[in-house]
Length: 132
Image (cartoon, helix red, strand yellow):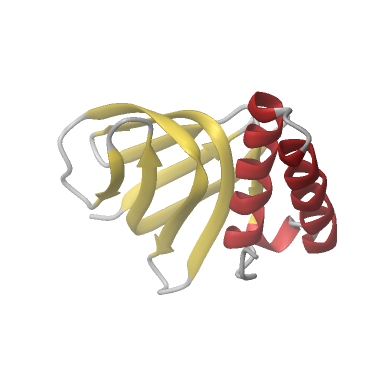
C-alpha cells in the first residue's frame, strides 16, 4: 500500500499524490525517510529540500522552508509556511537571494541573513542546481 502525501502551504495544496517514500530533514533529528507502514511520527522540518518518490517512479522535490511533518496510517502531511516544487523555482531569483544573503553575512547581519541563505540553498538544491 503506498503512502498518500500532501504538501500544503497557507496559499494552497502544492502536491497530493501517492508515493513509495518521502525523505525530509527534521530540526534536531536529521534526515529521515518514511516508507509505507512507518510508525506514527510528528516532527519540525528544517529549511531543506523534501524528496517524494512517486508510485510511478518519478521523484518530486520541494524546497520546504520549515514547518511540520506528520506521518500516520500511511498518510504523510507536510505543512509549511512556505514551500516550492522544484519545477516552480526561479533559479536566477534564488541565486540573487543567495548573493544578497552572503553579502549581508559579510556585513555582520547574521541571524536574518543566515535564514535567507538557508532558504536560497534549499531552493537551489531542490531545483537540481549546484549551491555555490
